[in-house]
Length: 214
Image (cartoon, rainbow, N blue to C red; front, top):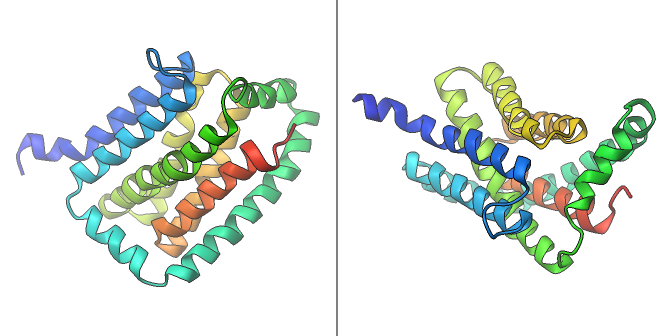
């Protein structure tokens, strides 16, 4: 394999390490507000994953075709369980983390002045599924093949949490680490992007729109 071929799998990772911190620091990309920008960034990362790994589309089609209802049910149940974890964690963070309430408020401030319908559509159709296509379906799966399942999980969680550091919000970084570990384990056990994508998008909708912690 040529030098360029060996470097190809790292292109999506470099994009993630560049685009996510930039967006979380500045809260926008050019004229686009945070939500349009987030949708664009996630879409770009998902496209880069498919472009880098030609076999990915076929794997995804097989994932969606087999055991579809079971995987969707797993995604629904796991989203509910993760929401319960955050429900308990919300009280603990507010009580024991000095800037906990401020950090949670800062996350929800991103919704101010933005249509709930637009946020919901972006979360359900682009951001939730797109993040799983990239973080678990591409990055964790790739590292599982190149390293091992035991090593790929903490590496993926570490990068997923690290790209949130630029937002300057410890609560957001903690939430990303918990979600990254949870969805990473779910992907490892189910081997299904569909199940994790359903879990992610439903959790997003519950936390941001349906049953927020404010």
